[in-house]
Length: 89
Image 1 (cartoon, rainbow, N blue to C red):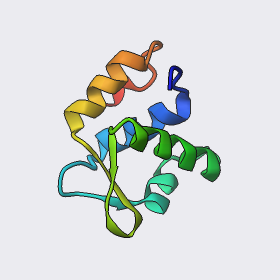
Image 2: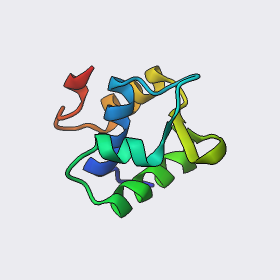
Image 3: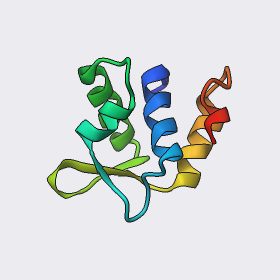
Image 4: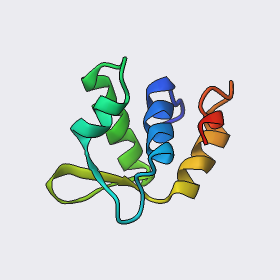
């Protein structure tokens, strides 16, 4: 994917803040609840996009986790042009 929108950035930022990485994983529904103000289908699409590039891993029974907090921070630093999400960490 060439373009990352606010939904992608919100998902990654939320997972970095919590942090949801390593041994900690959450249900998609839980993460979507933490990302209030976004459509559930839009969030599912963003999560799927991030799984495709390997930033998020999907574990058994539909739980998800970041590859690492550092990888999430690097993603935000690279694609958050307006610094709307980088300040969260």
